[in-house]
Length: 307
Image (cartoon, rainbow, N blue to C red; front, side, top):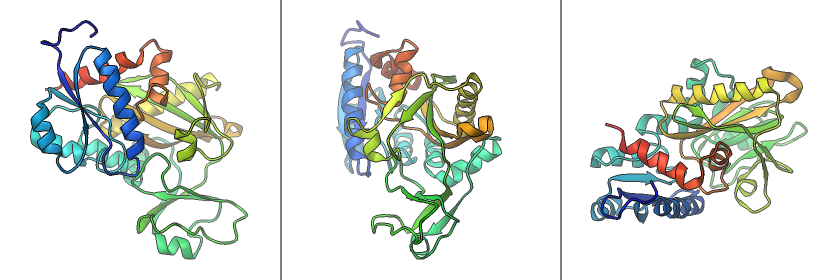
C-alpha cells in the first residue's frame, strides 16, 4: 500500500469517539488508525461520530469507512445499520454479528450451540441484584451490552451482602459464575488466529487495567501448554465464524490451569477490538510480522473487496 499516489489512494473515513462509555478509548483508536492509514498511503478523513454522521459522510464521500468506534452504537449494530442504509462499505463485522456479540447473553447461546465452553449466567433486574444474592458467591455482575470491563462487579465468596451497584448500571444486568484463573485472549483476522496473549494484572482486568499505563502486562505469546494454545485459537476461530464476524475480532478466555483443558472458558468476542499499536490485537499481529499500518491496511482492503 505504501507508495500510492494521492490521485489513486482510496478515501477512508475513520469513525472515532461517539457517545458510548468507551468514547475516550475510541478517540485513541481512531487517531492511531488514521495515522497508520496515512502512513500506508490512504487519503484519510477523521470523523467524531455524532448525530450529524450522515452529513459528515456525505461531505467526505469515502470509498470505505474504517469503524474505530467502541461500545454501544458503534459496535452493537447501530452504526453498521446506518452504513448499510447509506450504501457505504465499512470495516469489521456487519449488523447481525455486531448486535449478537454485543449482547453477552445471546452471544453465549451462540457459543453453546457451537459447542464452546461458557459460564453459567442469568439476566436479572439490577434492583434484585442489589437486594439479594441471585447466584451463590463468588459471581460477577456486569452490563449485558457494554465492553472494556465497564461496570463490572466481583462478589467474592466471603461476601455477606449483595453488591451495591451504581445508579449508572442498566436496569437489567448479567450475573455470571466467577471463573478463577488466567486471562487469555486471541485475535482472529479473517480466518486466521494471530496468537494467544496472557494478560497479567495485580487484580481484576478492569477498565483501568486495560487502558492506564502500567495497569497490565501482556505476555505474547502466552506461556501455556501447546494444547491450551491450540484450543484457544480453535475456540476463537469457531466463535468468530459462529457469530458471523468479518475482518478482525478478539475473543477473551479464562483458564484455570489446575483443571487443564476443562478449565478453559470463552468469555466473549469483541467485534471492535482496541486499535492502538500497543492494543492486544495489533500486538499479536506484530508478532506474526504484520506492523500496525499493514494491519490497518488489511482491514481496509478486506472491506473494499466485499461485494
